[in-house]
Image (cartoon, rainbow, N blue to C red; front, top):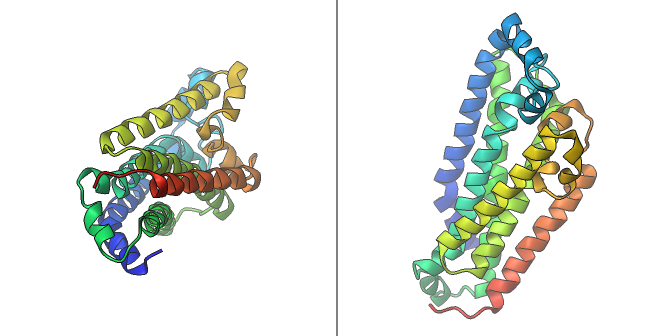
Length: 266
């Protein structure tokens, strides 16, 4: 890995990291601000009790809203945060490789003392560091929000969700990186990675709504990222996390191999 190029790329992606990290944290503050009103509202609790079980499960409120982590589950971790991370991973990772090939700026990089393999390994590292930075910024913001609003911070539950989200979206970055190393046109990478992500999310949604289709959790990526179950402590991140981490490493490794060996028209 070329450290000079790595630092340059980190500076170039820093605005995106700050934008997504602070946006997620700001939305979390909004959730924390309205939590006392919702949590103590008898009307909201009555409404939840009248909703169909499939809808309650889909929106991640089957565990109720008795605690702030449970409220985060329904209002933040179950939809908004995965959407933000998916957009960030796919957009940034596709730009790191396919974007350089598409706009012919890769020739300028390779003209310097940077080999193709060093370039692609550096870009993979930037993708991973950027994603983890967004997650750290998000949870630091949420923690500061609990201090400001005098709410309890459940360290164990939040750590499980953070790790679960990290390994899940490392896989999203991984297959986006593989597609980015495979295709020259960024729009093909964006389309392919978005389609795969939407398919995974749809399968997870069907599994959540139907108790007869729970087997779908085993074939969809988002079956391993279930905030409600992680918050309740009914699922650990050790086994699934290791599997997803290995899958992400494999995807990045295949992307590095593919980009290093393919013919490029610079």
